[in-house]
Length: 520
Image (cartoon, rainbow, N blue to C red; front, top):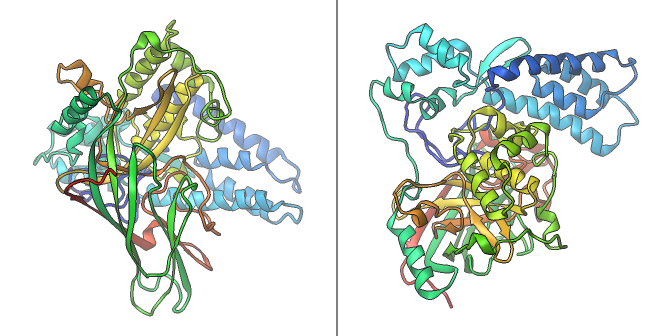
């Protein structure tokens, strides 16, 4: 996903880390272009295969939505729009099919928001940080796939965050900056006293839930003035945590604005607090919620020799196997898995190998998840990924190898000013049960083996979970397309006339650590 918590502007290099960084209009990002050179010929061939069948149909025959998805993925927007328009004219089109075609039209609009830079624009942004950049340097970095771009209806367009991502992906480019600035990463992405606190308390007590933090959180949404007609009702959903025994407990609602709200049940896997408010003339519309909760650090001590393959069960089945469109065992995924896993049979050691392989993929600001047709495949091919993309890729690879894996996401914070959206996950290892994993934070390099492996088996207490799964229904249900079809961190907004995308509103998150965590 990706973000609105603001990071430094594209013209600077201090790029917020984590998973989703999104600046106002272009919105965060996730990929859709950076195609490995070796795959270019295959892509061109696939475009031919895609276009011909669609054009060869009888004039009155509706192209399957899967064909339209492939056209959009290939950048053939004009052909996709023609197929969509033809399909929507069909009186026999089922409501579900109609919604699918309508979303592909919306997806193209969102892609164009993400990919708005011309080649000249992209080079100008890089030049702000490297004033003496040459055309040859830019062309070389571009040819190496370090500047994410797409060809859309014959025109090359660059991802809005490609210039800042360049400095995440290329040490050479980083060294060429006139005024280097450090990246704004979480202090917990490096060895930290809190990691040692978690490990020490787990060892001393024999417990897996330790080192708690009590935190007060305020999250808000501010809809732009005149985003909807005066008097129309704006509907807003703000993420709200559910109690998870041993992970986050003692949740206490403090206040909201407006006062009237609807809190989704704890059974909602993407839990929200829902509001309605009438739009006033020339004034922004604000929604907010404040609550407290206790969050625990996690540590599972694993003996690899005791780990055995998981036995399928009703409880584990939802976390096993494929789950299209984002968890699919493609031929490329199977090939990559074989290369990484080799002959290893022990589930824990397989997980270690896959974790290390995904950890090697460099982090970069991502395209909006709603614009990507298969996120795990994208993460495998793009040459970079953000936290949610890395997590879905690792989940796919684990499931491919018979290891149950599930999604979790929310917001991370710190003792200081840092906070950000973030995605992570859990894998199931018998006989231990569910084990934490954060492949984006990855392995450390401290020389202490236990500390270095912290995020495969442990979590810090500076993360609030909003989502225990992805792409889950809201309570109450959203009537229009979601802005974020996978995750839920910034929130969602709509009105009678349609969805309000991220360019029509802003959000804010504030975490305040409290003394004496309540663990009763």
